Length: 191
Image 1 (tube, rainbow, N blue to C red):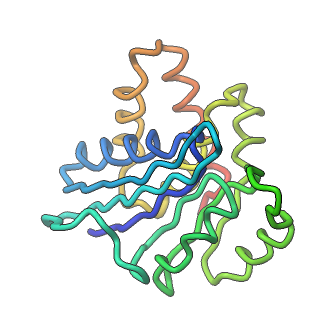
Image 2 (image 1 turned 90 degrees about the vertical axis):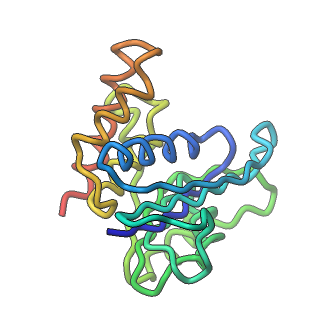
Image 3 (image 1 turned 60 degrees about the horizontal axis):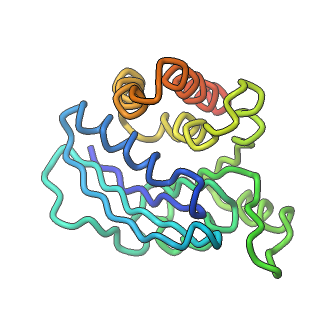
């Protein structure tokens, strides 16, 4: 088992939380994990990119070469397309449909979503709306983990345990709402 995942978004959207959840779940599943990140300035809506590598065998580098990522998991459509050169030809691009408009010449949402839909393997999820509908508006990032979960090769139980371990200090309600968000995202893309 090997998965190379590019996590993309804008500062403050929870990219590093996604990396932590998936990484902890992979470790729980006795897999090797390497992760690196580049932080933008969250106050200015800067780009945040994380390389997350998971494997049943030892991993020697935390960086994913261009053209080899199995998944781009993005919390924002423009950021999903920004890192498209990393995706391998049969890889999956999984993105939130809600734009984070942080620049004056941000492309049109329809244009971005059409470009994503033209890819052979893409999933677009309105994670913000799903998170609001389950009364967990801050959990759209975990909704996206659920949407990507069928492609991660990690059990739901291990992801649930990772969410619990990551959020337990914030209280039982926060843990429950994030687990609910995970399953709501998973349900949205049920295979």
